Image (cartoon, rainbow, N blue to C red; front, side, top):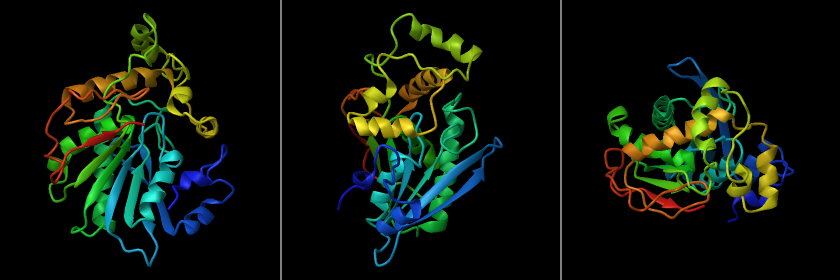
Length: 282
């Protein structure tokens, strides 16, 4: 069964189809709603479930990455998982996708983790019977958020546990090959504070260039109306520093932007029902 990305083109993740035609083609239903978090921000959430005769066999909560959103590339993977029998849900972090906030600006990662915990717990309670297994799928910076989420999940949602986590290119560190040259790296604090809406990210090479190997995928990513801000560079570095202090067990290989050294180890079982988190290099 082909991944839905095979039908995408450089202009739309749905290719030549409308969203409804795309969902029907892949035998899934789609729903969405805005929720309001404790900070008064309206956050966009959506979900995909399999159509009969496919039987529901579990749930997957999706966490998108840095400058990403749940309606672009991530949605294709969500649909692919859903048509195999899983109820899949995702949330646009503040400042991402259709959610409120400065574009790609996350001054503090902890409230974002709380948003994920709240929505995922609500979705699982409404759509997934408690006897079915639940998993997390996360990409890039979403992997770091997922690690913090699992560490917090046991206390925040004690009645339900995740059975596993799939981390695709988890950003538990920023590769030295991607960091801006000295002294620009050390000037990001001042730039982010003084001009948080400046839409420039000084790095070694373009973000799209190192994130996507195929030219048409770079064009599709560029077709998204969202762009990162200067503050986002510093936010990303600060988030990663926090994850390195509190992240759980991580296994994986080094990516272009993400950096997950194998030496980082810690127990994740407070939020998982057995098993461990594993990373898959992009």
